[in-house]
Image (spheres, rainbow, N blue to C red):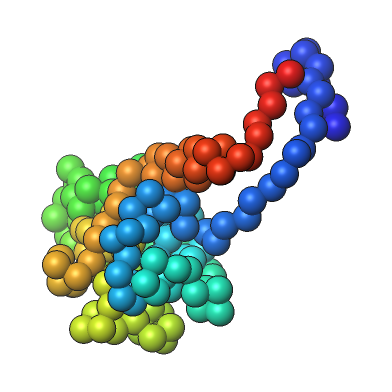
Length: 191
């Protein structure tokens, strides 16, 4: 297969492909820690991907995608600020509150944003319970850009919930999985 990028022509031969469930790569290097029943929740911009990892093995029949990412939270905040204060709030302010829990804005606006985000996180946990999340019986591992929502606005047992907010976690995981494949005889050519 060939393509041109920035005026330079490249030839690429795809020698093999590995497919992993969304979010799995981010935890692959720590898979030994996933004893018992674990739920992985990868909250992205548009979706929330959920999977179970039982005794270090992904449960292929227990993987779900919900259209409930950070973008939907942004929309809910924007709508609630408009309804409550009859004002439009800039996305950068909403992002700051969602990422860090606060922003340098008037208290009543901040309170509206925080309350909306907290309600959104309660809904995330309701969805997780629909998929059989039970904090007494399993651990929850949250990652992705939306992990900050759980950290800043969630009510959870910090001993049973791990939040990974490393934005490079998935890339690091794919690098780790590639290294394992190469050690087991996989070949990556750079002709």
